[in-house]
Structures are given as C-alpha cells and as structure tokens.
Amino acid sequence: MTDWTDPDTFAQALEQAETREKGNCFEDFEEGDVIEHGPGLTLTRWGNESWMSQTLNHDPAYWRSDAAEDRGFDEPPIHPDYLTAATLGITVEDLSEKGGYFLGRTDVRFPGTPVYAGTELHVESEVVNTATSSSRPEYGIVSWRTRGRDAETGEVLCSYERTNMIPRREPVATDGGGAAAAEEDGDDGPDLPEEFVTPEGGYFEDFAAALDEAEERDAAVAYRHERGRTQDDVTVASLPLATLNTAKQHHNVDVMSDSPSGDIVTYGDVTRSTALGHARSDERTWREVGFDDEGFHTFVAAGDTVYAFTRVLETEDSVEETSTGSRTSSENDASSDEAGTVTFEHIAFNQNDEPVYSGTRTAEIRKRSN
Image (cartoon, rainbow, N blue to C red; front, side, top):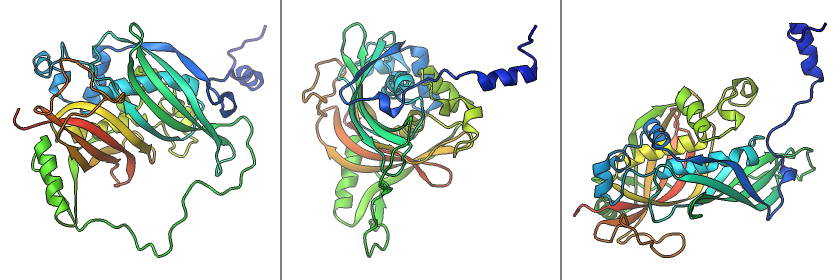
C-alpha cells in the first residue's frame, strides 16, 4: 500500500500533479468586460482602526466620538485610505493575482457623505483598455475602472482607474522599443527652484500664504515630514490580507525568494497610506476629495522605512466639488468659512532616498478662524 506521506513518494506525486492556478492572464480580459468580485467585505471599526494605527493616520475624527461629532459625523467614520485599500484588495484575486507591475492609479474619488462601520462593500471592475507591452513580450497591459458600492443602497463609495502589467499565457513578438521616453539633447539635469518654502502651520491659510510667498521669487512650497515607518510583519502581510488582497507578493516568501525583491513586499496602498499619514500629521485635514496620477516606483520590503515629502501645488478658497460636479448635502460638508481646498503632490521615499510612491491629492483643509 502506497504511503503518500513518504518524502520520496510525495515528491514524485508533486511532479506529476497539475497545479490548479489562481487568477487570470492577459488573454482573459477584453475591453468592456464587467467583473463582479465575489467576496465583498464588511467595513468594520476594528479593520479601520487597525489600518489607521499601523499607517500612522491619527486624525481624531476617525478615532473619537467627540471629535467626529465636531466634524459633523454621527460617529467615527471609515477612513478613505482603508476604504480605498479594501476596494482594491477585493479585486486582486480576479484582476492581478498572477503578478505583474502595478503601473498606476488615477481618478480616485469618494462620496460627499461619510461611510460608517458595518457597511457591506461590493466591488465591480470594468475593463477599459488592453494593450501590448512593447518592452516585455511576456506581459500585456490592462486598465480597469473599479467601483466599490454600498451593497444596501448601491451608492458608489470609492472609484478609481488602475493599470497593471498582467502575464500572458504565451509571449508575443514586440518591437522592443520599451516604454521609456528618450532623453532630450542638452539635458543638464533637473530644473529645481532656488529655494523651498515651508508653511508656518497646517491650516489652509498657511498653505495659501506659503504659495503667495513662493510666487514672488524662484521658490516652491515643498518640505519633508519627520516621521518614518519601518515595514514589519503587520504592514507587509497582515494589513493586505485583512483587505482580502491575495497577491502572493505580500505573503508567500517561498515564491518571492526568486523575485527581484528576494522577499515579500508591502502592499502599495500601505506604502501610500503611510506616506499620507506622515503628511496629514502636519496639516489640519477636514475631508479627502480625491487622488490622481498615482504611481509606484520601486518595491518596499520588510525592514524598509517609508518617509514622505510634500509639494503644495494650489489652493482654492472654497470647498471642492464632488466627482459628479456638485456638492452632496450632508452634515459634515464644509462651507468656505470652515475649509478651503488644497492640491498636494506627495512622494513617499525609502531610507535610501529613493521614491517609492507619488500622487496628486486634493483635500479640504480646515481654516484657522474655526
């Protein structure tokens, strides 16, 4: 009688057994396809607080009932970073579990009304584009528009467009041109301003005043944040798994030992949220409006430290419109007397001063008069 647990016998069995693969290849996606992601996720206060605590997002309105009420919330709501990470995490099994580079995300938007713990999140993705990679014949490029909805009301709670490289079943011939843009002749290096201006505080008026000061000379409003967060087992493996992100890059050391990183790597939304947590600690955030042009530039692994750098791009002495073009009426909507809109560029970097994430963020920032 065969002993299947005998090491030599089992090794032969493994060689003969076919692997039942997870995830989809490039050829499985066609423009216009709509994918309903099966699992769903109930957004909990525990999940929200776990995410926020580990990424150093300490806005009291998301932690304390009194601070939430002062902001116009019924109770501490779900933080937009956790909502974004959960929306993407649910999609991984169907869209990107096969691996491939996360090329970017844009048009990240949220509703004007708050999202509370207990909301059941259902997610769908539409394939908006497929393309051949000119530099990597073993990959194709796919873009999806993803929407996370309240399962009860159907309201869109988080939406974005993201683009990934996805492995092909069979490589294709390419021109080998690559995706990198050619360098311009006579490029002598970066054209940085002569000086950087740091806002005196974190209120809207401080950002507006700093931009006014910079406009009068060759200067930019740009600064570093002191805090750093070294990646550990919780941030690298636990947080993505709690959002149902099944990508092997975050939890399978065996597979990742042969990868360029040599180890499991941090979920991009953990890197992003950590950098944003550093930035928000130096400002008076009222409400997140949206994100654009997000990119991830190199992997972050356990032991790496995430820091943040911020550049202030624009201020507007009014509240931002929603993605639908009009403000949604709700108790927590800021008026122009309470907050103004600021557009930032945030860059996360590691202990070697290498950029690992960048993105443009629009947020309502509290005014000092309140």
